[in-house]
Image (cartoon, rainbow, N blue to C red; front, side, top):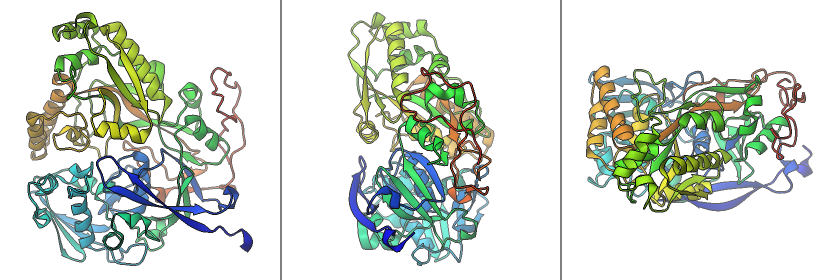
Length: 576
């Protein structure tokens, strides 16, 4: 690039506010001049919604998490092939015979991207920061397995030194758990437990993400964040495993329109689309026939959440009636059409050592009977209410309309559909400003606990107003159980209580992972239940690996009725 066209980086300060959390400042680096002055990245990924934050302690969105997983590393990290936990900043660990004490040994070459050593004290600080009540982390529950973790987070104890995480020296971290936790190494790979720069936060406070540069511990560092345009990552050359980082620069583009995402991929402006919401439903039949469109089992559930602080949804009979009136098979066959499976249980199939219990099916006669028993025969006298959904995908509105029709037809009740932009929708959920709302949960690790513990009374992701001591006791008993068979039985009891007896939620379907990428050009992406794909392992191959594909769809072409007006170009066939 000629010297006079060299891009000049500018800084704009923005502060995002996360509901119930600290204000989150982010560093937004802008390019002066027009877009064409931006040099091309080695890899371009459509990442979904614009992230709210990159702070591992408070982020909640999938798009946010995908970026944070590249910038910050934990004691363990994800194996690209199967998303199993493998050594990260800890090169090894020892586990006590009773399964309660973990001793992690950090790598001697683990340093921040700015050169400072990463120490065990950084991990102690990072984990206590998540648990600090002032942080109001919605994922603090991931650290409640630590001795006194929940007690510190809920204010029952004030002294953080009583929490079960200690640095015995700069390279050794001792973790004491309340009970044996078979999935603890999986938890250590989650973004919530990843280390953040203590020295930068001490200097900048809540504005630490505005540091220039941001100290990073992962395979990449933050080069630029241009809101509503891109996040650019650059290889972290001080990362302990930098030799295996394949791409020097990576762009993650924010996009919530399925048709726009398809256009960007079709023109070669993007190499990968890996947000399941960015698939045009009207083109699914066509896309499923293509070798560069991938559908695979995914550890996620789409469900309805009730606000039990509002009448009449405080009555289990009413909630059961609404659940039994839904034809889930129709939803996956007529609306989603991407390989999803109807769900009666909450936890998806495929979790090792766990058989999901049967929940509530489609029984409209029983639904009407229950509603009548609750005092609303044929829906008479039922108060007006709303179903909340977000606007990140047209699919959510389509499902809402279908539910509206089913409830009107089977129960005689009318629901108003209330749509909100993503951040406002999350705020409404967190503040219990809804009657019913569409929800989803993607498993953080391959254990039923990742789905079930979110509805414990003190979990920040509960968002229903429901508190059930029996449910809490079952989850605690399960996670204290060493016998795997007995643990499974206890978890099944908890799920039956949640879905069948209380009907706090209505599982609609199990997700299928959906993404675009040409396997002949893009390597290092492996389907797995968690749909986790470390960017460090992804790379392009071929002489023209940076050139967009040009071949068009093979005949027959989709009809005008099948193709949205927003689809500007035909989707190309894969190839260099």
